[in-house]
Length: 196
Image (cartoon, rainbow, N blue to C red; front, side, top):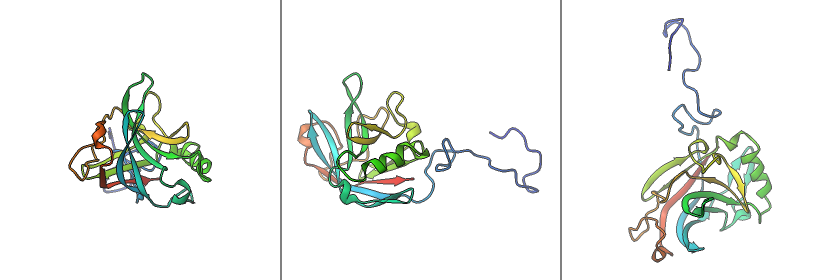
């Protein structure tokens, strides 16, 4: 909020009016700035540990801090959107993740997203047949995890309090759920764009 101006707006610049929540990669409303990189698409439902999750089978190379990350190194298992177990043992949030343990660029990617200011500014946009949403570190997370973080073999960003993925609607017209009958259905329009 502007409380006062020393000079009329038409006579001299007064500097920055709005301030991003973190860094300079988002505007004052939290919308990512600049062009995004489409990193994966074509989501389909799989199942493990009695819960459904979504894998994205089409991957693209992407660049972070001047390093090109090759989708071949991250292959089919690189990008996941799935319901994960919280501390109380419930399944109540999604995590978008890169598998980092079994590929040659995993440690570099982890360093880029957790040891630089990108930990609080790198955002993703998920869009599909059901619509689109931005997921940003400062308005995601469970507990104190409101940034990119290492969790086991994956580097991920958690959503906050999302029990469904609203962007996903299968070709048969079904929204994503934990119903085992949904396994094998897909949303060919589902894609993830990274903003860094």
